Image (cartoon, rainbow, N blue to C red; front, side, top):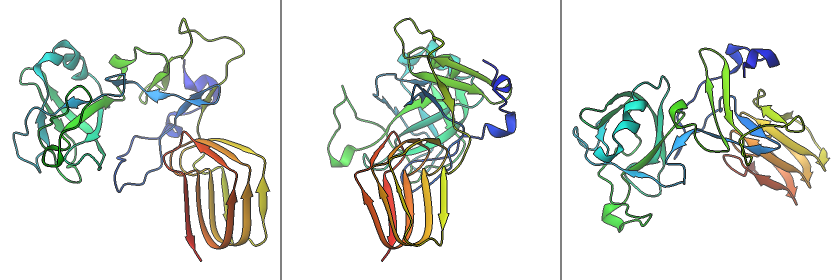
Length: 262
């Protein structure tokens, strides 16, 4: 579907940015289906990872090799124009992501567009089982690949043409006129500043690129019985004094609640 038909311009699509351990970002436009967040097309589909086979330039290098068994699948990745990887590259507690600069199927090698936070090493994950302390990390998956749009619940946005490709999470992969496909356009749904004795309750906040609620320099404010979902960053990011958050359901976000102050 052409997003321009829904009044969404190329400038509103945003761009993928690095995320993971120690990184904060404003997400690009994301897609939800009937209130449930969809995911960018990726591989493997089942949530597993692929081991790094070797690091030709050492821990701090940008090149790594992948299993030769990927064969024709990796050949397709070579033609992707905005391919990314995400994984646990050195430690199994520190995730990181990077855009792929190039794929060399002949040598089973990928080159990252930027260095990783802790570098990378050979992976030892087997059948989903993680190795011991000295052999952590070294595994990844690819995402934002049109060639991997093969499972219900995935989508891909061509940021050059403005075309949205979506594989609905339905039995036959089709849409009905009752379905709602939602695209996030706003960075923050609520922006509150220098308020006192403010109360908000019993609302559903759905679909932002950064925070559901950004509150700064608040005093004696409360947030009750809110459902916050499908945000690109934390559900709430609040600062001030005497802030109360109670009975809120926060899910499908990139973080829960961040509160600072006294």
